[in-house]
Length: 133
Image 1 (cartoon, one colour):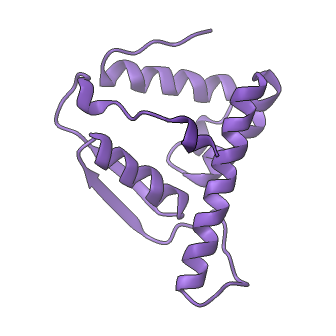
Image 2: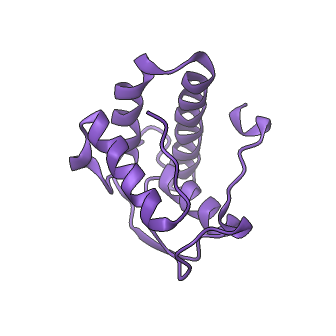
């Protein structure tokens, strides 16, 4: 089923449907744990380009966690999936969304707040081909 959303409420409903389809509603808000379970549940139904996206995102998460561990001086102690703090991002424009994605990949519990309830060109995060490399 293809889900379409034109405003924030519809995105919320579509995301809830996706989690329900995957049987992982209980992982909502659990960041990397939610991503990994969503990947496991959806991968068998995806075409190769969508599988590649999940694989590349997993790689990005691993690289960011290695970097964070190096910064902390604990290269051998990567505590994958354990939040390192809470982060509130104000604004769901391109910079806010990118910040939230990067922080989530580093293991932070991330919340994004946005005052607008409808989408404009400012609410769109474009994924270029280089994103998948």
